Length: 303
Length: 244
Image (tube, rainbow over all chains, first blue to last red; front, side, top):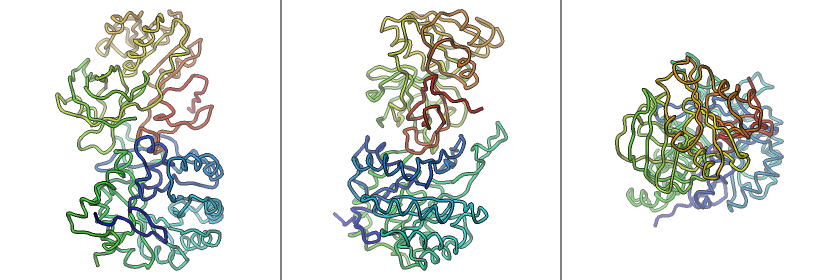
């Protein structure tokens, strides 16, 4: 059997398959269905400094080959995540986990990351810079290279674990933002977050989602994700985690050829709760079919 | 929760746009009346959550109204197999019903009352049922509830059948120890005010996953944030917070 393991920022993953933040909770809903230790790791629900209810409902709209969500970072806040959720997570998952962090100011990000960095089970900090910068005019941190770099520096200054900056695709030049994060000390880049989308109901003549717009994800965005992973992976010298519409073992291999060291799976989990386990189990067969002896060797194989 | 393949045994129209589908498969994950299933359909990304009308060891009955692409596709199926997640949601708590509960269903909120009525009757409870519809042509399952042995009252908004008005108009004629309900939100809100006892209500929301992972269907309650799909869809009257 081929070698599935990869090294992500100094930590060995048994395989490159990672359920994406916001689609896997804190793991325990899925642990009722199968042993989630089969996964490389997973990125838990986006955590903020304070508790958040998120956006009004409806928060979900369906699209061709995908969906839009505007959940709005609902989470119990970092203190409760540490005191209530992580102990439950620890019971069903025994590997280093990826902690996903969001914030609305540079200080928020640093505060939340510093707390989570001290948790033994946290292997990586995945910092989502797609949130609006409430102190900087409301523009997302992830849309300006300098703002993304500022978050990266602030987080790196208070943490010891690998920091992976998760980038938004809703920008004009994602490469410049990725490079700014690398220069500011990021240990890795993950991309792409959801694409801004909107649906309108013909019956009500109103947006389907209460928040009007939301993040578009699912198989429909896969080609955009592959393109952006390819562009970023070839421009930076730190590992890239690829995501966006991945829903099969073949998609994982394609992402890795584009330059991803590991691959996150998001929307597909909501449709088939076994999808990540199935992808892990399907990978050896796909590797054999395409004569791949080690996944690590194909990373960035496309020049 | 369980993911399994069900075989379509029958699928027939009950009214112009309400259909009943009977499916054969493994129902072992269904543990309570009022739970729902989430059905995958070809060519559509998200699953369709549908309440369970009735079930036994090997069959599952769902009743659904055609409202969009998914239910329209379902209405045309005559045979084949469906990938279904079963055993979703909390369901109704029967232990607090008292000896003569009333079950109130409005429109496609009627189906989950059927298995609930069966279970309460099996426990020796006297069960009254109020079924609310807009007009006579929309009525379904009146006979089925009568055949179980329930006292059945039907209301129509236009007065074309049964009691003219809303389910709350029929409620005045019923003595009850507790209430169980499912239906459109305006009906639930009216019931909340009209009922003299405690009770349980089943809510609806657009869902992502249906099993508690995505936070797509959250709501605020007096006892904290709840996910309609996982902590609900059934809420106790005492915890409900009407936001608008």
